[in-house]
Amino acid sequence: PQTARLTVKEITLLMQTLNTLSTPEEKLAGLCKKYAELLEEHRNTQKQMRALQKKQNQLVQEKDNLRNEHSKAILARSKLESLCRELQRHNRTLKEEGMQRTRLEEEKRKEVTSHFQVTLNDIQTQMQQHDERNASLRQENAELAEKLKKLYEQYKLREEHIEKVVKHKDLQQQLVDAKLHQAQELLKESEDRHEREKDFLLKEAVESQRMCELMKQQEVHLKQQLSLYTEKFEEFQTTLSKSNEVFTTFKQEMEKMTKKIKKLEKETAMYRSRWESSNKALLEMAEEKAVRDREFEALQGKVQRLEKLRRALKVERNELNKKVQSLSGGTEGAPTSNPGTDSPSPPPTDSLLEPGTCPAPDTTTASTSSCSHSCHCEPQLDTDTLLEEANTQPVQAQE
Image 1: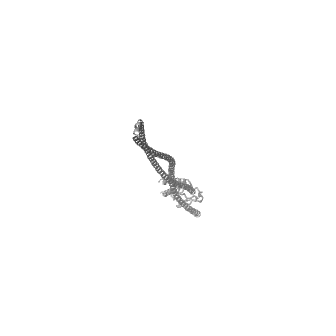
Image 2: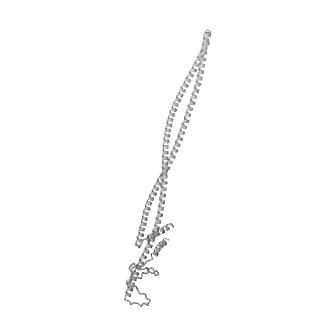
Image 3: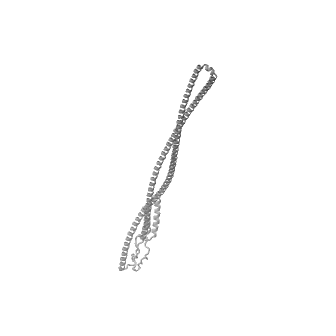
């Protein structure tokens, strides 16, 4: 994977920087410095992660608060909608009641006007009948007056003749007087009847006028009630318009809250993605730290092995120096050998080399063998093989 390749590259760069250092103490100090840097980066990432977690908790709390506010707004909206429905229903019922009352009042008014018109027509017909009767009575009276006049003329003309027939005339006069009296009584009765009918018609006219005034008063009262209902309806219309305005403002606030919630959801998604990326980076750093810890442990083991090897080589060098000194002391007291013998002569003590002027050791011997001379040089270690082992061992641990 990519993380393993990156760690291998970093390990190679670290090993190259360690190869530039000369002593193991400097290498160990560089490793400790690198470990301290990684530990500081790890602490910084942990601090950032805690801050992000705190911010995420705050955002989750704000989101819950916004959800609660949203639910409260939805409840208020449902309540307002139910109130609006009730107001509309009440408005419709009021309209229907007003229309029904106006219809009933209109029907009553029409019935009263029709009844009043019928009574007026009846009164007019009765008055026409009475007028006709009066005309007929007047005509009869005129005819009777003319007859009386003719009779009086005839009486004058025939006065002399009547004197002759006084008895007959008296009888006729009495008969005429009786007829006249009867006619006068009939006329008086008709006049009385006419007066009674006139009084009755006047009473009915007064009653109808009073009814008309009552109807006018009722009409005024109904007009007042109608104006009151219109005022109430206008007030209801104003309250309904105000409630509509409140509902529109509440709807706009709801839209703003939904936009804000969407924005906060986007921000939470962004912070969640950042948190996931930081968690991923933290995991990668933890893996890298584990790899570095294993490398550090491997290097510590290698340093311990090198220390042990150094001590062993130092002990071996001391033993070899003791052997060389003992051999040099033995050669001083021993007799000189024959020139024909094959045993090599030991080097003189005067030819002891100074430290640092040791000739190159024999390549055929082992890498851990010490110099045969009595110099103070340390055995030459194969650092290239040791560095190759150190490079290959962390890679194997990483794999």
